Amino acid sequence: MVNTRIYIIPTSSTTELHLRCRLYSSSWGKPSQVTMLTQCSDCLRSGKHFPVPESLLDCATVQPYVHNCLVTLHEGRHVYRFCVFFKRHCCLRANPLLSSINYVFRGDAVVMRIGSGAGSVVNMQSRDNSLADFIMHR
Image 1 (cartoon, rainbow, N blue to C red):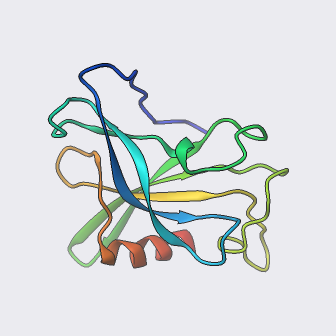
Image 2: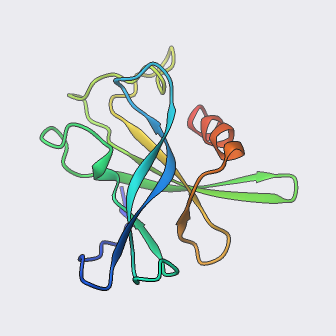
């Protein structure tokens, strides 16, 4: 599985901010909106945002790396883009939020919205939560 993430080294010109995202935790009974640590490439917060999903996903000793994939959802003439970060391993706890009768998903997942402009992650709005639920159950 290809990892498309870009990592930046924190310097004096990078800033940190917290952006809203949707967490599907194997420890919780329902998905929830939480904030994820995100590094910004410049101190004005107008540069690209680089999320740090390791700050939300558990079990770093079982699986230290995080998978990611990009999802594009078309609804009429509207196009929504999301980035899904997840951990999946046979030793992780089963996630009832993402499992079905035929398949058991083991691990956690986080969904972030990608903005239309520069292709950087942005805060999720209320409608984005229902769209994230839709794509995660597909």
